[in-house]
Image (tube, rainbow, N blue to C red; front, side, top):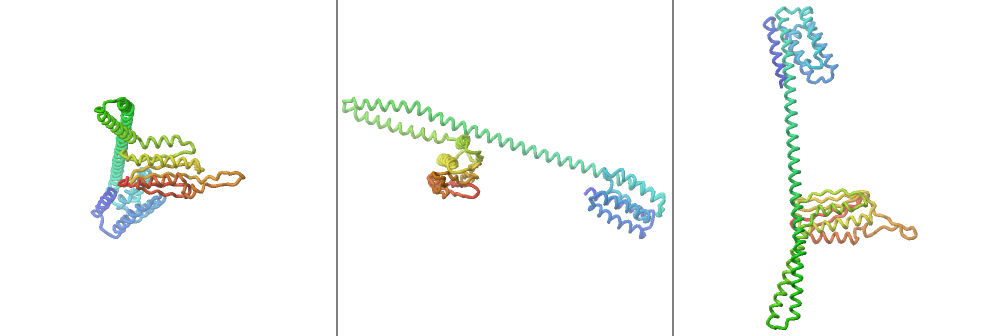
Length: 372
């Protein structure tokens, strides 16, 4: 935009030559040539092409006074940092042409030509300074956006880390409470039940028998309630991510790539179901596959939970007696006991399980949240 503005100003400046000479055919030719050259400068990218154009302009200015009058706008596109030395020679040639060529410019026209060429240089310098400032502004703006994005990412990671630490601490506290209840309250209730049972045996007073039976029933009910509470606390304290990472860490058959993207409020049934399925899948890989890489994906979507276990191996062919190769038909057909157990677990959770045997072995499980 600023380049077009500078070119327009220089074209208007060239019209000042009409004050010193009539608007004849030479002026019209110079005006049209300047428009054509301005358009060509926009499309010529190679230096040698631009040099040829500059030579043609200088040659034309030797014979046509109109082209000489429009040299300021014609030189404007060539005032670049890389070609500034060459342009000084071109300017000298243009001035020499106006002074001693076939055009025979007057002193007033020569003055306008020199001032116009200097004006084109000043406008070009201002354009370059503006472009440098604009590039610096864009760079500063982009750097600021990048820093803001990095800061947001760090804040998000920090918040996720804090949430995970709180979640882990909560699970550990639940586990500690369950253990203390089991070790302390559970033992006290067990001892009380034994004492009441002994009292019931040695008691000979019929009036106390009903009270002792009621006490024993209350203690048994309390013991059952404590056991259920302890089991619930222990089950809720299971960290699906940590357990899965432990299973992956203990798996030494081949490398395992774990991708975990689950929330913190995963239902207990989903936790234990996924843990059992991963255990069974890894066990099957060791027994039936020659995989060199395993990938496990646990992902929570807005409407479902997803588990993917895949490997890049094929079914092993162990050597039986007599040198005959035998393939595990149950595993190959997807009807093995382990796969049936996985399918039953998924069906109990209201989900779906798909098995794909293409370039490896892939188990794809989805469980809707509403059902789970």
